Length: 104
Image 1 (cartoon, rainbow, N blue to C red):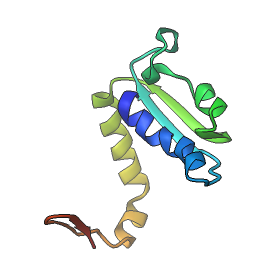
Image 2 (image 1 turned 180 degrees about the horizontal axis):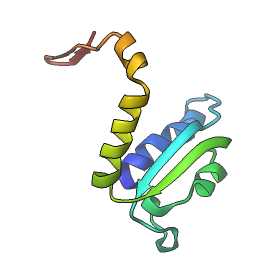
Image 3 (image 1 turned 90 degrees about the vertical axis):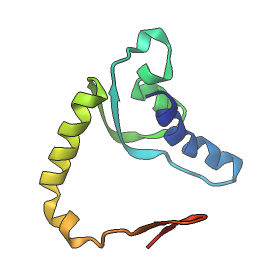
Image 4 (image 1 turned 180 degrees about the vertical axis):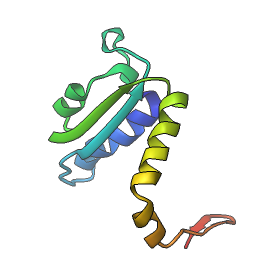
């Protein structure tokens, strides 16, 4: 939620500024301890995101009401386990930090 959520979702809205027709994100996972009734971005529902075309009307969405320090390790472990073959088949990126970040 909050700043990271806003940063990711703004991409879709900024497309209009640059003359690009973006349809919205097709997948969204929200890990939050916030609730919608307080009005903050962290607690916003995916219905709000759909109304602004931040996500597509038929986007696959999941809201996890949990602290990220609990949910994220479980989610990453499950993803790594279920995608082990795919992960092993991909070339690992190499990061070189000089004046600029180089990714090979």
